[in-house]
Length: 240
Image (cartoon, rainbow, N blue to C red):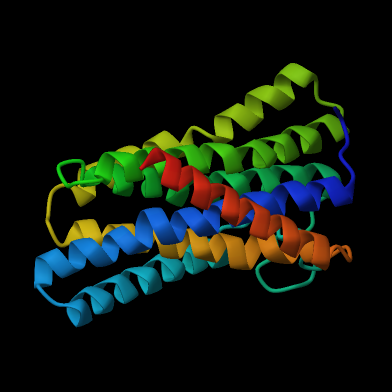
C-alpha cells in the first residue's frame, strides 16, 4: 500500500490512542498507586508520588518535543516547535515525522520496562504482558504511517519497511533502561510507572488526538478511541 485515506488513518490512530489510554491507566497508573501505597502505607503519599511521576513524564516529553526538531502534522510551518522548512519540504517532513515516531517510542519502551520492573510483585508479570501487547498493537498504525510516508517519496517497499522497523528499536532500548533504573531503588518503581503513564498521556493528548481531529472526523475518532479503550480493558482482564 502507498496510501491510506485520511478517514482510515484517523480511525487507526484513534483506536491506538484508546489502547494507550487504557494501558496507561490500568497497567501503569493503578499499579503505581498500589506500589506507592505499599511503600508509604497510605493513600495520600502514594497519590502524591504518582502525581509527581505523571508530571515528570509529561514534562520530560514536553522538553523533548520542544528542543528536538521533528514534524508536527497538526501545526502550520511557522508555528512554534515546528522544524524549519528546508529545500525539499516533502523529504524533510517525512524525515522529521519518522524522528517523531522514534522519539515517542522511547517512553513506550520505558512503559514496558516499568511494568516488568516489579516482576517480584503479584500481578507484575501480567501487567508487563498487558503493556507490551498494548504497545505492540498501537505501533501497527504508526509503522504503517511511517512506511506510507516513505513510499510516497518514491522509496522502495523494502526501504520503507526497514525504516519503519528501525523506529521500533527505540522501544527495547527504553525497556532495558526502565528495567535497569526502576528495579534498583524501591521508590523508583511507582515513580517510574507513573512517569511512563504521563509520557503516554502526553503523546495521546499532544499528538494523536489533534491529528485525528484535524480533518473533520471528530465523532468517528471519538468512537474508535472508545472502542480501543474497551478493547484494551477486555484484553487486560483476559490477561489477568
